[in-house]
Length: 205
Image 1 (spheres, rainbow, N blue to C red):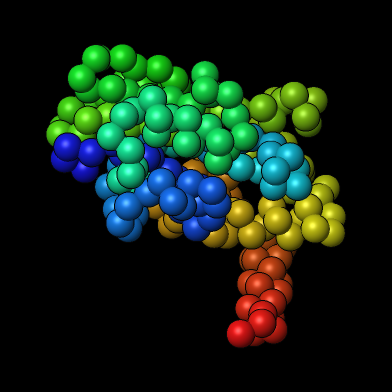
Image 2: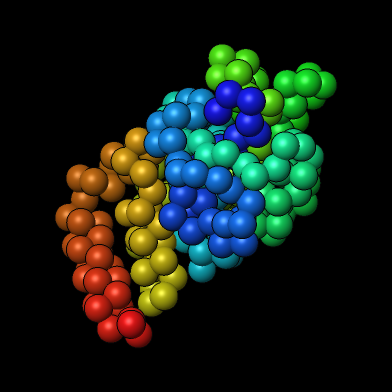
């Protein structure tokens, strides 16, 4: 990432950049970003109320993240690009600017050290906070997260399973390790994988 503005990702940004696509260059450098404390402790309306990854300094485990070049040379413009993709206000998009020394957003110290070591001009990342308690009305822990997933049905269950299954293998959080040992989860992951394969086979062209 030398002499570039990096976009840091760990979840759906990797496989679903959406309207960020015109503003990125090259391929993702998998495990090339800073290690950050991550967990599936955010309930996402965008993901049909499934659990999404976020930086969680209380419940998260340090996981490798991934980096891709922004097409922008200005950190503030790259930050606005990511805010548009995330449908989030600018203050919930983290940023480091090596030129000015500005750092904003949860995880900033980790990213600033990485920017310095990588020789990057700066970096931006999603800094949406954990919100599990707001929706579930109980604190996040491994048992309450599993209860939430078990309570999802239909398209919400499918999307929740799909998101966790699709997250990069390096995103080895405590919840993901617990789910890997659950028979119900393995069955659901296989079911959703089969659905996605069928949809791909039936897609036009």
